[in-house]
Length: 67
Image (cartoon, rainbow, N blue to C red; front, side):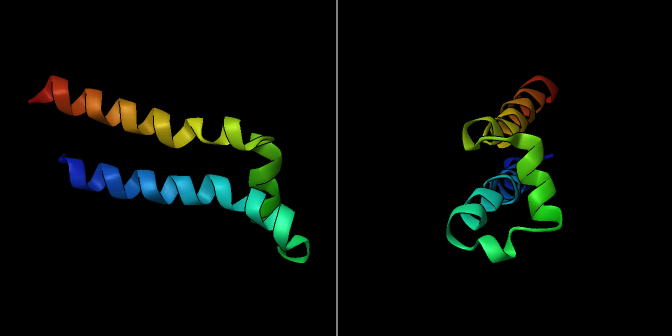
């Protein structure tokens, strides 16, 4: 595993975890389905950002210890 896939995955995770809060504030008519369940699970944007940050730290540690 290299750094490239980790960066792409972190970018996708960031969008997926923070997009529900954008929808809730600016487009409430689209805040339903999977976006509502993701937003209800993470509850706050501060808490939601820990998922991509945690994956990034874990991926970098994996790369550091395997090479």
